[in-house]
Image 1: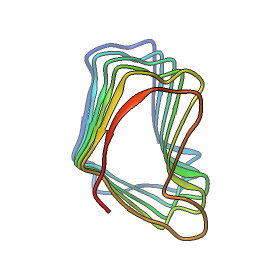
Image 2: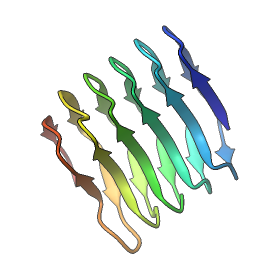
Image 3: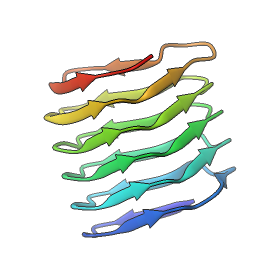
Image 4: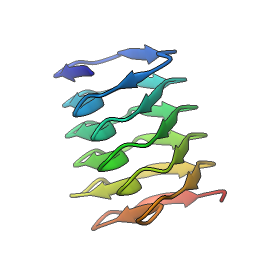
Length: 130
């Protein structure tokens, strides 16, 4: 997949199929960056963000991943908007570990076995469509 550590101002755009990896896209301590118009499928995690801030995740299609479509861990002040999370085995979206002050809006969830979203110990602005 696409892996970034300790970076700033990245743009990951228009990858038609990121598949068969542990993480389709992984951000570790990445800030002020954009993930837009990508398709992540058949990974363990579609997108995984750890210890990252002020990122935008917009207009992506994330489906058939085995753990979750999107996981944010210790990742705050980001925008998750207009994404389609479908048929992921775990959660469509999972926010944990002080992933605070994220704006989550206008995402679509269709689930396979588990829940569409799980939010643990975080505070976020949440506005969803079904």
